[in-house]
Amino acid sequence: MGHKNTFFLVLVVVFVALITDEAQAAQHVVGGNQGWDESTDFNSWASGQTFKVGDQLVFKYTSGLHSVVELAGESAYKSCDLTTSLDSKNSGNDVVKLDKPGTRYFACGTMGHCSQGMKLKITTGAATSSPSSPSSSSSSPSSPSSTTSSPTSTSAASANNYQFATLIMVASLLATLLFHMF
Image 1 (cartoon, helix red, strand yellow):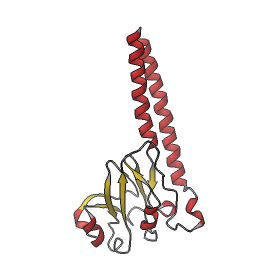
Image 2 (cartoon, rainbow, N blue to C red):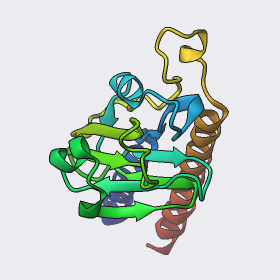
Image 3 (cartoon, rainbow, N blue to C red):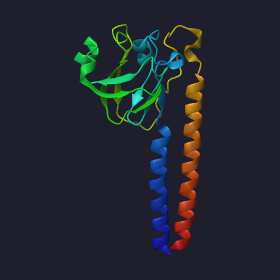
Image 4 (cartoon, rainbow, N blue to C red):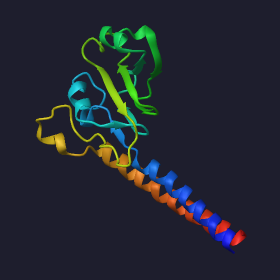
């Protein structure tokens, strides 16, 4: 009986640790309410965000009008050199997972958009025990809407809550099943 309880306790601790890490990741809708668009001040937007390992960047834009290109480094970012791209996305609803600490560079792949300021530099910090602040501000820090959540941020948070609840339920069912097996 003692081994069964120990196994069950270890299993529960592992599931809680996995679920907690997943639940604390934030989705940052790039550009806030304005999204990935030429009129957005991405430097201002990024300065109001805290990016952590495990978070996601969500690029929302009109497909065919814009794209997202991840650049190789600072030099390519400053000069808008799209030939050194590491990755390119064009769905209009692109998600980039921040999987390690460091600086990453993104630009629009449409001719001339990067040089007009449609580029983003972010620095991802190591994951911590507190959740990151998700994107909910517009590009203008002084605007009244800067503290208003965008519908996308709210639905992303709702989706994360749903995923978290689903994981808890699956973990509980699995733990119960394993408890009765041993």
